[in-house]
Image (cartoon, rainbow, N blue to C red; front, side, top):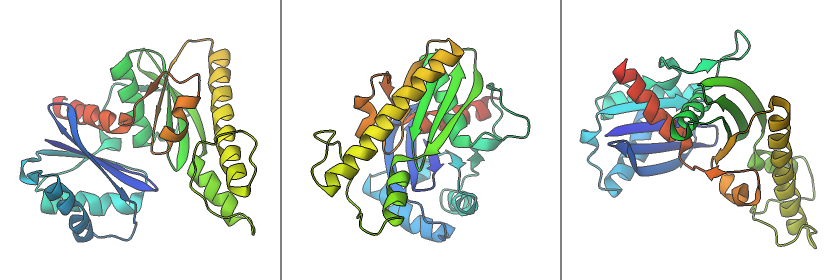
Length: 255
């Protein structure tokens, strides 16, 4: 079995693969101060609750956008799972990364690009609704040509609440109507339609500027709120990053 670990700014998502099939998935809050032993205290009970014999995990790959967590997570894998972790950003791959010299592509973006290319074999735009909303573009010929980074939906909402005195936190839900009749509904409607219309517009602009047809894939923790409402989206793939890490691990083992 292969353990894939996607360390994000808000959540750490772990996936367990067996014969290329995702059989279990866990999500925990990102906490930068934890040690490898504290991660063991969090993760091993999750494995046990799912009746996973973690001694049978024979591979692990880590993608991280939080440098402070990469090392303790890798030590957890080594100390408790008796494995050496593969760091996704260090894996040799066959994607042509056509971006400015000196710019390093994040391992989560790389995983999404590889998964989009392998799973659909088309020109793809992938949209990852995380702490940051990342839009990436990869051509069928395995060429990653760049993308966009926006504040994530929840990030924007939290910033708005923190910056104002009389607006208060509410759960983000799909609004019943565009025009709200109270503060909560106005906030929900504003955030929902801001991102819905922005993403539709961005996708149209990418297609217009590049003059290429694309399959549009959406993933990420907040995608479920809005993915069914954006007419330009073709596929909702909630495990895109984990699938990409599984592919990267196989690339490393087969090199």
